[in-house]
Length: 360
Ligand code: HEC
Ligand code: HEC
Image 1 (spheres, rainbow, N blue to C red):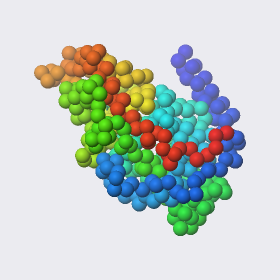
Image 2 (cartoon, rainbow, N blue to C red):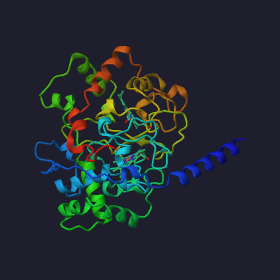
Image 3 (tube, helix red, strand yellow):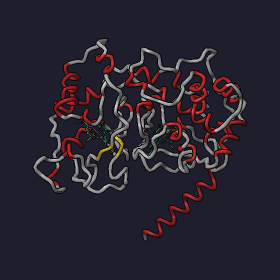
Image 4 (cartoon, rainbow, N blue to C red):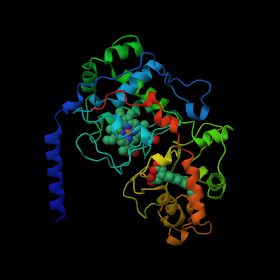
């Protein structure tokens, strides 16, 4: 029986490939609307170090402008159906609100789309951290057989060259009109890395420009001290952020379906977390209440469970080894009020990160 359903699924997928591989022409004729004077993408002295990170990329406004167009351009998928922005939406903190995301042939990604913020401070990318170089990383979704499906880099260059709006953008960014893979990846990485968050209420409080309500302040205390969330999800505003360096297992299941990285998953940056639901590498939790309930009472005795969630006196991996955080309803309310202060309205409404193409 099982085999039969499996074969049917394969036939269905092949059918979809055959039917939908053709160009989605309604998007083909769009041109971007760009302002006469470029937006400022290059980080200036007012931008804190925990956003800038260390990057080998020499970001310029012209490169990031080109990167913005590439990020929103459906031409970068084999059938002109899917852009980076199809799965990374500005108003959702550049996540997409789906458990899994549909790629160019209506097949879903195996994992939940990730938010994009302060990428220059990250040392590894993807839930399993399988790559450590942002310039190489940004080409991977284009080649991915589920996401955008352009396996040949010559084809990518050809598709970009064929668009009348690119020569001027490449010339402005690199001095001449030549389109090549290195320039495409450098521009995309410049744009993606410029998506920085440092104007949330949390940041403003740290700069002395705003103050927490008493509930938010209680939540901060729980986050930083009692529950020590910050040990993993560091929100340091004094040194460069660590999100992106760390991996852990938080006991979502006794046995993981997804191998992750040696049974662990990338510790996500919690900036804009209120906008980036659903949560976890498989998008299993719809709300921050669900996430709090997980840490409170639902942690499973996974063999890779982080020591932070283990009883100190147990060395085994049985159910009694787990140490949940047993949050009271008031704790949850305060913690979530604090997490809501990480939303950066400036970042998610800034026109320089928005779609330059007319919707059609
Ligand atoms: C079909 C949906 C889809 C498309 C299209 C897509 N992405 Fe993603 N993106 C994802 C998913 C899903 C993940 C997590 C994948 C994983 O961990 O295996 C991800 C992860 C990322 C990350 C890693 C973030 C982190 O914290 O490690 C970045 C950066 C990113 N995408 C940028 C891009 C860029 C640039 C493009 C276009 C070239 C793009 N994405 C196209 C779905 C998509
Ligand atoms: C031991 C390190 C560790 C600690 C401590 C920790 N987390 Fe996490 N957290 C993770 C990892 C790893 C994930 C991703 C797990 C996965 O998808 O498999 C995660 C996921 C999350 C997510 C979902 C993020 C997303 O983008 O999907 C939220 C929200 C979250 N944690 C909040 C918290 C809060 C609040 C605390 C404190 C009560 C906390 N975490 C403590 C490691 C940790």
